[in-house]
Image (cartoon, rainbow over all chains, first blue to last red):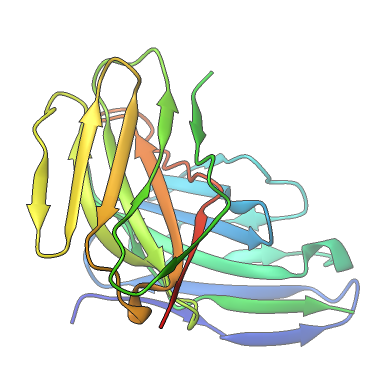
Length: 111
Length: 115
C-alpha cells in the first residue's frame, strides 16, 4: 500500500529538549516536504527536498532542520524546541506534477 | 509573488444544498496545476482533484464539479446535494510544473453541513 508514515503521532516535550519526527514514504517519490498547520494560518511549508541531499527552506524554516540521506526518509529535527513550535505537523511526498501524499500528522506540544 | 486566496473562511449550509468553494491563484506563470484537498474532523488530508491551468473545461465527478476561469484565475469547486459527511476544511494548493515543486496552500474554507 502506498503510504507516508510519520512518527510519533503525538508528542509532548519540554522546551529545549531535542526531538526528531520521522517521515518515510514507499512510493519512490523525489519530492518530500514538511508543513505545520496552525489555526487560521492553514498549512505552511517548513522545508522541502527535491531529491537525496537536496533540501531548501520553505516559508517558516526557523528553528527546524531536515536531512535527506535516503530517498525514502525525510526527518524533521527540532534542536531546541520552544512553545511557539507547538503545532500539527505533516510530512508529504510527491512526484512531478502529481498530488501530494500526506502522512497522518504529528501533534506536537512544547511546554 | 504568487498568492493563493480562499476568501471564504467558513461556510454553513443545510444538507442537500449545493455549495461552491472559491480559490484564486495570482501568478505570472501561465502553466500550473492546482489541487484541492479535504481535511475532515479526523485530521487527515485527503486529495480530491487536480486541475491544470490550460484546461478551462468544467468537469464533473459524482457530486463534485469544478471549473477554472482563466480571466480571473479562479478555481471553483462545487459540491452538489451536500451531505453531513462533506463537513471538513477544504484547501486549494497550486504548484508550478517543472520548478521547485513547491506546493503552497490556501488558508482553507471550513464547510459545515447541517442535517
